[in-house]
Image (cartoon, rainbow, N blue to C red; front, side, top):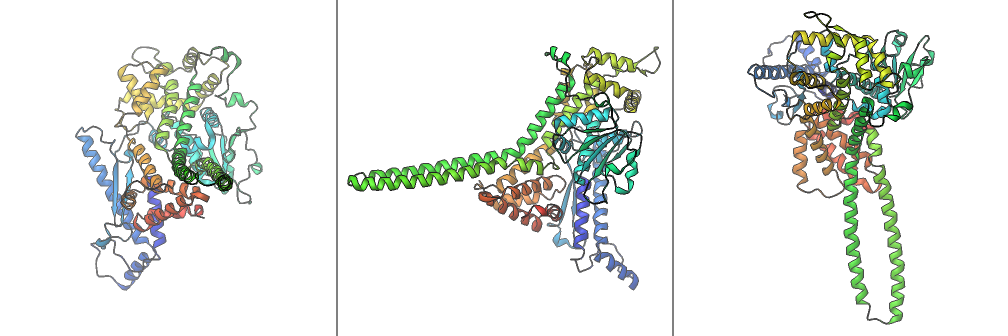
Amino acid sequence: RLYMALLKALEVLTLEAGALSQDVCCRGDEKKEETDDVAMNSSMDASTGIRYRRHFLHAAYKEHMNLCREVAAALASGAKSVLAKPRILTLPLAEVGTGHGLFGAVDTLRLAVPSSFLHEREPTVSGSESIAALSRNDMLPMLRCLGVTRTMRLLSALMSERRIIFTSANVSKLAAVGYGAVAMMGQGLLPPPPVFVPALPPGLASLLQTPSPYLIGVLTGPTPHFINLRNVPNIGEVVLFDLDTSGNEPFFAGIPNPQQAVPDLTRRNLDEFDSANRVSLPDILYQDLTEVMKLDKRMFWQGAVQEKLGLAAERGRTAAKNAMKKGLQYFKNKSKEMKAKESFGTDNVEDEEVEEEAATSSYSGENALSKSVGKGNYFFEQGFCHEAAELEARVAFTTFFVCILGDLRTYLTQQTPGTSPVVDKEKFMRFRNSSGDTPGTAMFLLCGNFVRGKIFDSFVEARMLEVQLRRTVPEDAPIFALTTNFHRSNKVDFYVNNVRNSVRQVASDADFPGRHLISWNEGVRRRVTELTSAQAFNGDPVKALSLLTEDCRESSVILIDAVMVLWTRILEGKGMQWKKALLALQMFRNLILNGPINAISEAIDGFASIR
């Protein structure tokens, strides 16, 4: 997110370079004496935005170095929970450069810096740092796109070291699902495939013929400029996931026995139904991921349901007022003659039937709209983040991997005292058999494929080196490392229930790095939803909008969450819900005029949503 915010700021600076006519000095100590050629080159640099971008990047670098020094000093002093606090990178005068102090208060960009960017850690083995970095990518876009069943099949294919291809007409979806897949493996500190290409350029189509395991995204399209997998010769055995069709099983090209090569963890054999009391690890993972999807979907439905209840209450108050007026009118006309009263009563009944029919039709249309709200938004927002559900997904996958690989004694054997332990794969398979993953089950087949691959060997090598070096596990390490360190330090057995409790305890710690993003995510969504609701705002909307605009200067997290809700409101603003779209557009206008420069880039990215 930090890199994305920086790139969007640079994009806006490039677009605005043509609108800025005067040359803005970006260095206060720049010499005033310049030759004509140098002055001309300087003017050209300013007109093309080079000087503005240079000033912006230099300012970001200096502020980042200052934050790193602060964190290093705090860690050296032995302070606790240093990395749990959010660190903000403040960049004043991001748009017009130095020399314009009048604009410093309104031309500020803030960026939340991840804790892993604030201190230097020594890598244990080659590639371990990249595994920890990839594990921090979001996994929810992958879960939303594939669903729980296909995600578990993807996990099986990755652990079995198969050649995997993603196809989609959306390059953003390819990248999001690809990085989500390697983040899923990173929850167990497992490396990605040797060849990982989120979006393959058409000129490198021959890379699909690589015999080694890979994870490659292929962009599809109607023109010959896109890669057609049918025209790629000798592609061999691949597992194909179509990201644009939901619910379909992956296609196994050239694989004679898919259940053996890529075991389906959601399928159970007949003999497994007899042991109804035993819950396997795939069952636990399936249940946990299902709860994650429910939690994620509930966030998108919650606003629509609350507004539906509010509108229902408003209709109830209106109906009560109308009933009181009709009752008073009835008693007022009761003393009139019977003939006039009957005539009036007939007319009144007809009027009431017309009103009731209109109200029913209005309610049915509103109800149909409220049913569509949330469903369409859920798919529209599949690329955005939901921090609470993201943390639950990490807990689910970490629990699965710790139960399998957390205990070193299950796959290491010390042949003689005083010597280094060696890998014992047969011991690992015997342990899985004693744990309930008997031969013939999908989990036993998966473990067999896993121990025969190179991923298992590299994982064991990294863990052995960590134990030999005895380095302290940093507080912002992946949950897998924190949980296994907790079990070894406190001598806790790696039973399923113990692991689930330990992972939950580590992830729910108030000082766990990144937990502040959950409150940011929920708070910003709630505030924007209330300001763009069809109901009257409870408070001063001008003051609330001003505070929200100031908070949105943090462009890597808060601004993205706010814009996500605004695009959702614009999509909801149809028919009787037109007020939501109007308020969302007004808020967007205020962000562009008074907010950070990244609001311009966000508006450009979602411009197609404005109708």
